Length: 225
Image: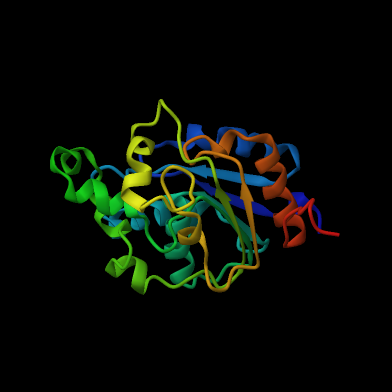
């Protein structure tokens, strides 16, 4: 199938904007895909409000006659799960999640329970703690899904990574989400890259992996035959 006969919805992470997905957007357009780099208000809205806002943007844009793929960074992947749970009559393609806290993240638990930090976190953060009602009840994607996780735990200019090790008891992760918490039970493929959560969307090798998965349903694993 020609890439021009396919469409992709990009969803940024919490506290970010479509600009954070711009490099991915340009790379996908260069490949011939039709791309919607969608924004949403994740600061004051709850999950249902964010999802409703997104669907109002997505529904008029989608061409129901060609496959639609999804790429989400961090909370953007949770929103993909919310969109797919609505069971819209679209031709569904594949999905790639980047550092998505599919099982929640201990960082969320830490910030909502520690003093002044909870006053500087979006309302939705409470839904991203492990075993929250949202995390427990939101269906996992029912389409081919590739998970990309990062392994760079610390970046001096990202405050949340300063206390990552304390919040997670030293669990491997990308400075925001533990590697093990990015996984889905029914994921089609998984790859770990040496990237920090906040900057992975701008990494050229990661973008190459996104394109490869959307086209082939798997990542490039150099260490495998």
